[in-house]
Image (cartoon, rainbow, N blue to C red; front, side, top):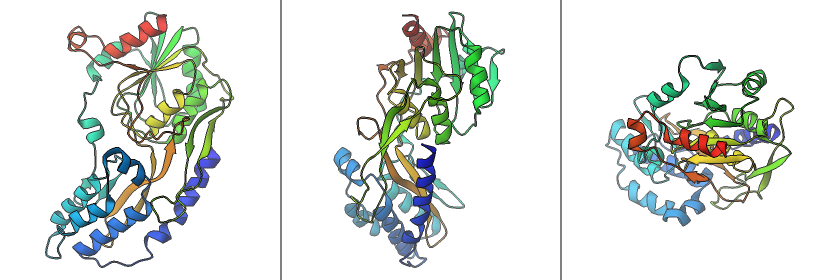
Length: 335
């Protein structure tokens, strides 16, 4: 999969010239036209979102073009462009200016957190172990618990060896990635490879081949190979909530393909498009999904992944100092 990522980076670097071929004026209307065209030619989920909720990008242009006039200031223009991008309902779509950062976060803000930092600290205590981006301990029922807060936090093979070796005699393992908004995909692959018994199909990827909404390469399979280091093939539960996004969403997609793994918690936030960035005439930077990925059943996970067991944090458990998802996972692993 690393070769695939390098190829992807090379492909995306080639597309930069396509974005800038046509010149637009550095005016409110010119910047809107530039932004609309960049998305129109390079965004990767138009068909999927047209089917999901009726997105019509041409109608979006007509709706926002009348709001952009050359007498508005930068604040007003930013608001118009941010609203236009929000029509894509994509957490990977952002607009960055010196004064603000436009984002679409409704994919998790509109849902319960199903995670409490206070409860987490209660379960972890103060004598937990730290290995780079990992925090881990053995719970009192001989269940291993591993917390990975962000795939932006690097992990080495030696860190994983030490953590898994420490929990080697546990009867099961909980991997808690709630609130993990993504990061480096290679970290997600590195961790998932520790639970693979044989080379496993975990999904598919496509590449944009032209400027049309449907100009894509054929689906290319993605495989995950077993790590050459210490591996864990006993039962595993992965805990998720709505804030699991991007590389963390991909990790859940990988783990869902493995027979000894159960996904517990809430529907993930999604984010199945690998992002790419370009600039507007005024220097603002737009980031958007350019390369779509799919699960092993060729289905998009752009809007998230259903857990095997949908479990929500209850008020009663919160008042009792219990994490409903962790307790459910412990019972599941005890079986």
